[in-house]
Length: 97
Image 1 (cartoon, rainbow, N blue to C red):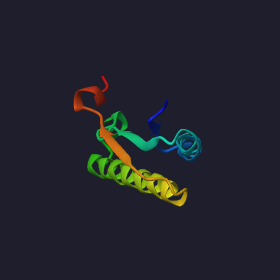
Image 2 (spheres, rainbow, N blue to C red):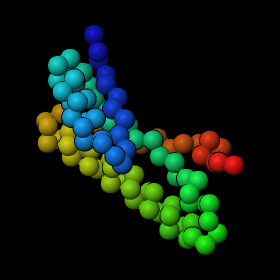
Image 3 (cartoon, helix red, strand yellow):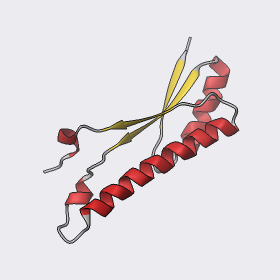
């Protein structure tokens, strides 16, 4: 029996993923946690010397917060006990050569 469902959320198509996860959680009376994996130093933020790296990293942080808040609101609207987890990629893995 399913006791806990982890739903991967992100920038695109998370609403559909979350809707399906909510449905499955209801069917199985399982706990639901939305999980968002964040690369706080993405390759594109450091790929151009002409870019403002600090502004790009700040935008990644802002976007991560918006995704979490949006997902939590969807779960609250569906009357599902809400939980959202943001996981940071380790720096070594986020670097591209």
